[in-house]
Image (cartoon, rainbow, N blue to C red; front, side, top):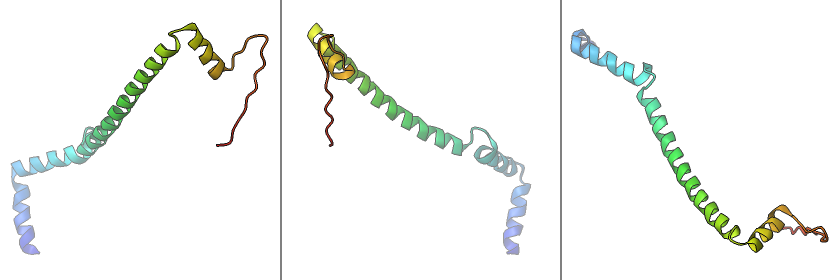
Length: 100
């Protein structure tokens, strides 16, 4: 045990080792941009990039659906009747719910 301490004590007496060790501790634990924070931020970045791809795909699907729906007045009327339950003044609407 004493042999280990005899080896370590002169090592910390070395200016370059002590400075390097202090900078290492600073970068790992103390600095606001430490390695642990960088790892978490990188992981969050990958998650957000995946979400971005998902939403880009969804936007494209909605654009295609929009072009199909608003292509003709008959399609607009069909969409309004199905999704917003719109009706003509002389019509009645019956909603039938099924248990799935």
